[in-house]
Amino acid sequence: MKTGIKIKRLRENRRLSQEELACLIGVSQVTIGKWEQGTGIKHEYIKKLATSLNVSVEYLLSEEKQQDSGMVAVTNNEKHIEITIKASGELIESFFAQIDRLIEEKNKKHQK
Image (cartoon, rainbow, N blue to C red; front, side, top):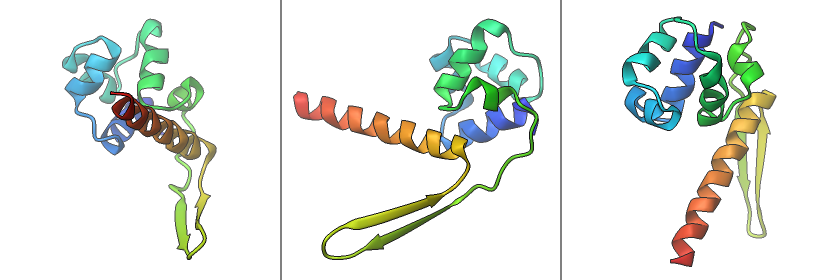
């Protein structure tokens, strides 16, 4: 999959507008649009882009085909909840990054 397509899909999956992603990286919305259309990305922005999208630089720049989007199963009984995730490493990495961010936000709210 081309890098521009990955950027757009990752951005949309995270419910970010081009403008919001641009602010996170320090570029214009027009630049994000160009990247999504396939324009080259300056080296200085690649790591910021990968970090903002919660993926590795290697994943972002690789031209490999997209792996299966995965599957999540939740089993809830009286004693515990079991969550089974079957997905690529990148998807799981992104999942844990999002969970970490949610925990940090919740902790900040409780500290106030």
